[in-house]
Each structure stands twice: as C-alpha cells, then as structure tokens.
Image 1: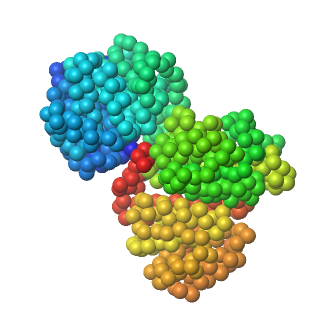
Image 2 (image 1 turned 90 degrees about the horizontal axis):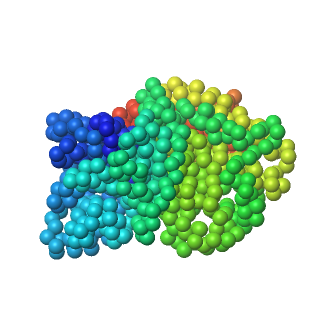
Image 3 (image 1 turned 90 degrees about the vertical axis):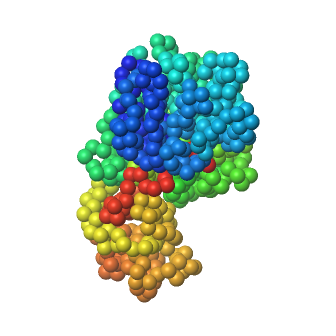
Length: 615
Ligand code: F6R
C-alpha cells in the first residue's frame, strides 16, 4: 500500500508531487508528506490526514520552490498514523530523505544494531530504520548513495518501493523495488517516479517499470541506469509507451470516482470483449490464451486464486467453467492458499485474478503455484503490473483505471474475460453444443446494453436507499450464479457505508442466518429468472413469514416476486450464466447511495487502500 511520487527536472516539483499524491491517494490516505530541495537544503512537511490536509499545512510551513522532491501518501503498517510516522523520513545526519511503500520485516534487528552505533529514531517506522541503514553503509563503506542503497537493500528482508535523495547531491534520486510497484517516467531533461503512471501521464508517455530486485539511479543529464540489486549487473531497461490519458483518471463530472466507474460499465465491458468476441462468426479469440489453450484442455483442474471482489469474480467463473467446459474448479482465497501447503500438480491450471495486479497474497500464491509446476494465467486490469508479469500468460480486462477503492467495473470486466475463456475452452473441448455456444456469444455481446438499461433504475434505487440507509444490518441472498453476487453486494455495502452486511446462498439461510430476521432486517434477494427461481420465491416467503423487509432484484416484467417484495430493482433479461453481469449493477448503486446519504467518503473508505501490497 502507500503511494510514492518523485520529481527531478526543470519544473517546480511541488505541484507535480502534490497532484501526483492526489492521484495515488487510492493507495492509502491516513497521512501524507513531502520533501523538496530548495537550492540549499531540504524543506519537509508531513501530517496525519489526507493530501488536502498536507496541502494546507505546506502553505504555512515550508518554502515550496525547487525542482527536486519526493512525496508520500500512507497506509499505516508500522506505527499509528500520526505526523511523526508519516513519510518522508530523514536519516540522523539530515542529509538523506526517503519515502517507502512496503514493509521491512527485519527492521527490529537492524534497528537494534543501529541503536548500538548511536543512531536515534523519532518514529516507530521501519522506513526510518532503512534510511539510517543506508546512511550507515554510506559512511562505513565510503560509497556513493546508489551503492549504499544497494548494499543496504541486500541486508533487508521484506517488500519495498523506495525513493531517496541526498541533499548534498541534488541532481539525483535513487529508487529500488521488491514486491511493491515503481514506475519511472522519462521526460525531456526531467524524470518522474511513482507507484503507478497516473502522476506523470500529462508530462510523458514513456515509462520504465522496474522489476523486482532492481534499482535505478536517476540523474539529470544522463540516461536512467538500472541495475540488479543482487549481482550489480546493468540492465537495459524496456521503455514502455503508455496508453493512459488524463480523462480516464479524472471524475468527468461525476461526484465520485465510484459512480463514474459504475456508469462506465457498458463501455468498458465492450472494451473488454472488443476484437476478442466476434459473435456472428462464432469466434472468441484471446491473445494470451491461443498459444496455451491445450494447457487448459488438458488440465485436471482449474484453481482460481484471488482476494476480495476478484475472489467473487472467481466464484462466478467456477459456475461457468464447470457448467460449460466440464472441468473441476476450486476457488481459493490467495491468502489461505499460499500458507496451506496446497496440492498442486503440473496438470493444474491456476488463474490469478487481480484488478491492481499488485495484491501481495495473490502474487505469493502465483509464485507458489509456479514453483509446483502449474501453468499460471493472469486476469489483471493494470497493464504492466507485477502479477501480469509474473504469470505465464494472461488477459487484460481493459477496464481503464479504477480509482474508487470499492471495485465495480473491475468485477464485471473480470467476469467478462473469464466468460470468454470458459466459452473458448468449452468450444475447444466440445463440451458445449454449437447452439448453446452461439447463444452465449450473442448474449454476451448484448450485456453492455443490458447494463445500460439496469443503470436507468438509478433514481428508483436512490429512493430505496433512503428508506434503508439507517439499517444496522443487511442480509444478501442469491443462488447459483447469483450467490457470488450476493457476497459482492454485501461487501460493497459494508466497505463504503460501514453497515454490517452478510451474503449467503439463499437456501443456506435456514441453517442459521434466518434467526437474524425480524422487521428491522432488510434482505436483498437476487430473484431473477433462473433454474432456481421457484426455490428463491420460497426463500422470500420464508423471510416474509418472519417479517423481514424484502428488496428484490428481479427480471423486467416479473410479477410473482413483485407481489411479495417490499421493493424491487428490475434488470433486463439475459441467460442465467451471464446474469451476474447485470444483477450486480443495482447492488453497486444501492451501496453507493446509502454511503453518500450517510456522508461517508465513498471513494476512500476508512482503513482501506486500493492495492493491498502487504499480506
Ligand atoms: C473490494 C475490493 C477488494 C479487492 C481486493 C483484491 O471492493 O476492491 O476486495 O477486490 O483487495 O484486489 P485486486 O483485485 O487488486 O487483487
């Protein structure tokens, strides 16, 4: 977690860094700080709170001139969020200043050693230990900053993306990474450093994404030198051309990124299948899949690893793959899988799903699966992310930057990709009839229109949100393909409104949760046309009999549930297997409106961060 930004060049560094931090605030937002070189020394300002709090503090505390600087927005790991624990951190001499995203696991033993050597510490952070280790190495070995960073990092266990500079050498920034992302923007006589490319997209389209265990010395007037931390080998860095544009990372007239991203779904789902799904011709073609389709065909089993919302997309995929491609699927929380000594063989295909492509647990699960010989396929959104590079092959979701912390368009585009993979595989294996295959291709092509239709109920959903915004608890129920949607609906509500919500398979309710139901309990039931429709209707009756309040997601034109439910949210008709792509829309809107009505910070809910790069 945490976002880091740096600049060295000819422009004023402060506005670039401040703007960059605002764009990276999705990565953490409990404190923020900045360090600028003003021509004679370091101007440092940091504070608990958001980047806007930093901006206010800076205006009365420091001189903001200077063309070299670094900034940080924090998601606390070591030490509570307060001014002192915020980054940047000075070394004891005051010469070095550092920002860090990650965790130094062996910081305690290093700190002990440094304390013996007379170092003192202001903060509780692992980062302050690291900058002093670099200082100590620099002094003891009598080496330049770059070398000192390299030697120090070889003594460190953990994860990091760091940027550090020395006030006595204000023409360079040294950066390094292991496990946390770090991009270097290459401009004309200027360089940018950031956790992702969004802070510098209006200045340059050229970026180097450092690989794990690489460092770079970024010096004015010279090409960026990238080295391997372990063996000191110089690396010829690949300069990637970025396709991002500024519009994609701005709110575009919406009140929140989350709402913008909910409304983008018709177009991004189309982007996801564009050029890959040719429904009329009966073709699904995914670049990353074609060369490896036999791995999938011959797989004994597919194991899906992911976290959070991406895990829910994996659960939907389990139904799809088993239904059409007749292959056993297991869906695993990456955080459990990685520590469970799981049985994985070379005949397994592992699919890792991750919006950010940086989730630490998912990454660790991938590494484990690769060690055990499995073929690992990635479904990621962020192009060039660590997971997209660590997997053997994969498919991007093409959802564009998702900035709201609560995942929305990532979920539906992940399901779109997984649906295409399953259809392609089923076709290859001959486990789906031609008519069924063609029908699903056609239905998938219609999904963006259906999502657009579902969005038209926004006002109605807003009115429902008003009725239930003060409820203390919610229950979400669904069956079959829509059980994962119930889980996702509950997660959306709890993460942005802080209302307790549980998702359950509707039939499972009788085995415990039904005890919770009384007249105070809103129960959101996904009751669209499906094989389980009658059963879900019975479940609704059971809730009604116990005076629960029913908010039902129904297929347009439904009459049975309409009569039973207290409130309905209609969605267009599609095939059951694709229904999660539309039933999830009203649930996203419901949680969004409840959170807004409760005055919560929808885009930056408390305690969360967009990419979870710590385990
Ligand atoms: C919830 C949410 C999280 C993420 C999870 C995995 O709205 O966004 O649950 O889905 O942290 O993140 P990725 O997909 O980036 O691996």
